[in-house]
Amino acid sequence: MATKKSSSSKSSSSSSSNKWGLNKISFWVIVAVTIIYAVSLVLAAINANGLMTAARILQGIATAIMIVIVSILAWRYVRPKPVVWKVLYVICLLIVIAGIIVPLCIGG
Image 1 (cartoon, rainbow, N blue to C red):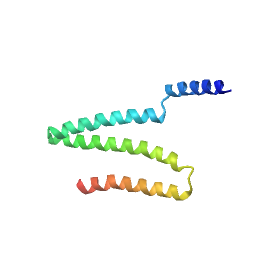
Image 2: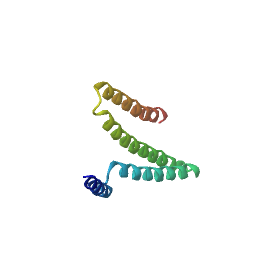
Image 3: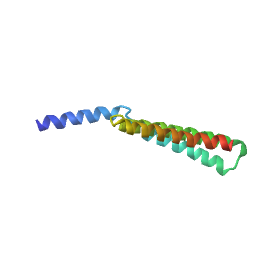
Image 4: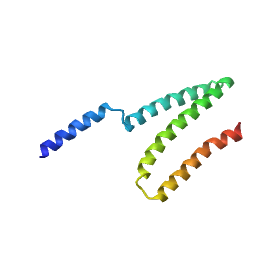
């Protein structure tokens, strides 16, 4: 029995490594966001006024991508919980979104 269990767990782990799971997607999103932030940092370092808008746009896109990934993971955690947790999730998500949008409106 124990041998069967270990062999079935090996086959399931090898098949899951071939799929695009959330862990693999999260890793590659971090890599992509790192590249976006690096480009944004270079644009800010050369102090090109026309390119600063592009740098801000790239940072906004990177932030949005990360928030989407974290929101999905958080929802998976909150889904089986009582309603209070779901309300807290929605409130926190709204505050995060407001924290991104309001400074853009005030600064622009």
